[in-house]
Image (cartoon, rainbow, N blue to C red; front, side):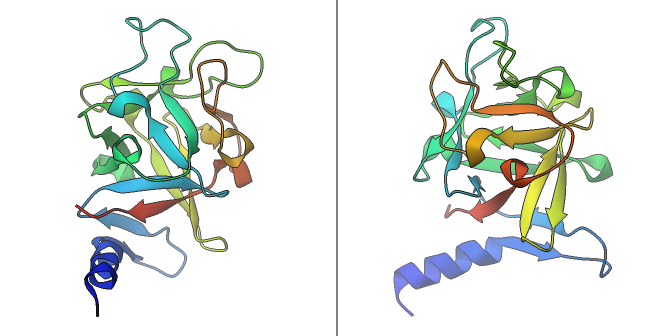
Length: 185
């Protein structure tokens, strides 16, 4: 086995999916960094590795994009296990992904950014529930108030004049699905 294949094997092992019952959602454990990949192959990007959004950056600051075709530092996240089956996502700069108002923000009729990445600890708006779909082997991310994170057009959108990721979907469909991709340390 060459070094590249060995590293890929280690990365795959670092993301373990287990189930306590045949109909239960899998429990995700992670020992390293990961990326969220949309169904069309793009990656979620925390601009500047986090630290954007909120009152200091203005209401139209876009903290998340979904147009990266490769994984880099800005696409690297850490899954933080929280009580009650919730998770948070920490950026490489140490900030947490925040669904503004606990979710329900976004879509074509709003100019407000539905996410920011300047939280320094995981409070209510930073807590998500991972929902696993065994038929597609993908996940959806439910916000604190029950909405789903949406990657508009299945990802591939970025820039300040767009809302590439929003949180106003009431059900999880294709635009809300993604895979967790383990990354090497």
